[in-house]
Length: 240
Image (tube, rainbow, N blue to C red; front, top):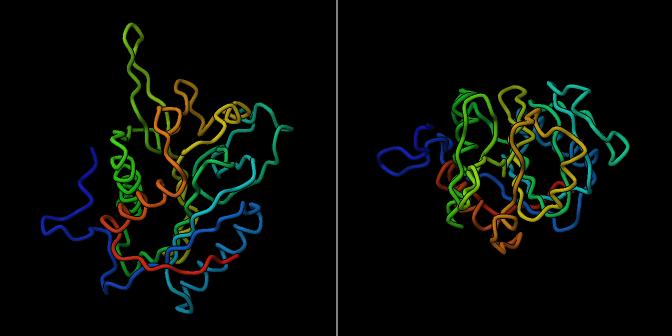
């Protein structure tokens, strides 16, 4: 189990040492993947150079697949179904599309903690805290990156489905890429890949769990949980 993201005084455990708020931006229209990555990398470089502040950028993409640095070609089952993009993030294949909230997280770990494992744990705790707002118990598993939910029904063996993916990269101790939370995507679209290389488990979403959660409600839960784990945020303009 992960350590709780708050210390005993209730302060954000992965907050900035100087208390500066991170920017919080939301794009309302779908953002093409190549343009998003270019804007994200430019912002991360500016943060590293001290020319820009931290930013969490929430958006949706058109339907597409991305291949992380550990992606195996055999895990791309339907290569012609959607555009496929190589990605510098950690992890394997994943799907992005409408109804899925992607959050690109550009934080300066030099001003927080230079601890990659603690950072990934903080990202997981952030998502778990957001799910808790909807009475969904998110969990992490050894050897399986991301956040999972256990499904139980009478007469059916319990199963675990993935509800959120995590894939990040650090350059000069500034993070980019981030997390994706399934709010109401078309789950059939995951069938063109082996998501994150895991064949024994499925994927789910908040709506698939029977919760009619809107994207705005998911964003509010993510924002509240982020404050608890990472500290203050302030509204900012999206890079695109």
